[in-house]
Image 1 (cartoon, one colour):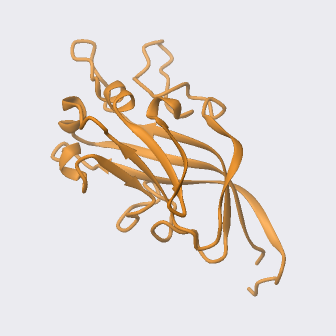
Image 2 (cartoon, rainbow, N blue to C red):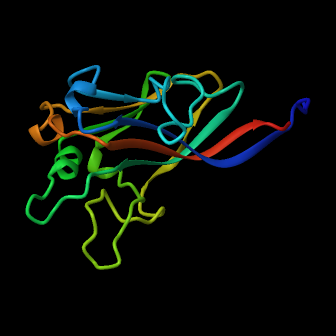
Length: 191
């Protein structure tokens, strides 16, 4: 089908990318390519649709633009037992800083606890698994003004551990996922 020239459509759609540990043999620290930082939206090869919806590393497809309205950090965790609580999520959230970079300029930098997930599972028995925020899409960090990503403009999100990885994070094994989600509006050519 041919493109309609000069006509764009605006679609409410998230952009997301994940850092993940596939199984119990995967250690968090061993999967990191840099010992102090995880980069999202940069390495999108060999990932499933669960792990990313990006087609290319660090840029939007074609002449699309994106208007980021919210950012969240979503963390999956293995279910901790009452005998052995897992400090993974609190240690990760309170020992890291997240930065959104658009065109090599910082759009925002703040501690990870400022970006609650707005996602997750709560058990009906009241003993919910650990999560990073309320499982409500409105319980997320929203930008006061939208952050625009122009066509072919590089962007990424970095999670920095300024004092190094806590032992509970470094030694964590899979399966686990750590997503960064940019929620907003994708503008693209009408087809």
